[in-house]
Length: 312
Image (cartoon, rainbow, N blue to C red; front, side, top):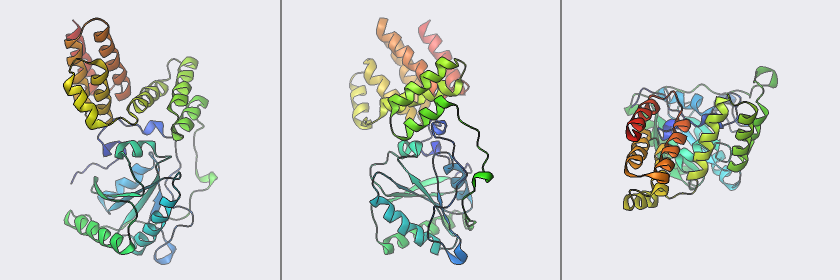
């Protein structure tokens, strides 16, 4: 088991897109969630940002991540049943619940096709469990297996129960820039075009807004890869090694999947293999991906050097 706490980006080892999630209050139990002994709940609602706080506890206690969608209200019924079962274990398990219509990064990282979807996190490592409705007996059997796996890896602690959600006075949130607020709202609705427009407006107002620049690159990446079939894209790229559109699509998917070095190497090879407008398109796309990953990332610095060598 890894000693590194899991965060949402680590589910794919990729670019940290948590900046695209609206800043959230600290994790708190869902209203009306079933409780364990003494009225304590071991269920917490999370989003892209607060997920990390819950996932870090997987170093001491097995954490379950349950995904549902507010666009499919029936998927919530299973989550509520799962919550009641988890609470009956009195802290031997912690359940983190995320609505994928709000948790953009988790949805993208896990490539959710069906809800409800449940996985375990043990010692920072994700373990897929099941998707779709399950009977209570089946759920308990799965959770017992999770506890057994956790014990084998020395994860035998108990979660601290959650109390009431913090009040307005207990939270001290910095107000968001209006452009970033608009971008976050658009992302939560899956409206990438509106988010791109908001980030462009932020950069027009302040060309030095690096958060907006990073956000713009990441939203563009999400927009380009939305609905793309990974296997088909790779097959098409393999059959056309100098096709800029096909190669850049796979490079995008590599970045989203955490294969940063592979993405950069693919486009540097493409720069070497092409000329004229095609070469310029490959170069510009690579530079766009530098913005997605972040200028200070050592992989970007290494790739910039390789790009210069390829060009000159």
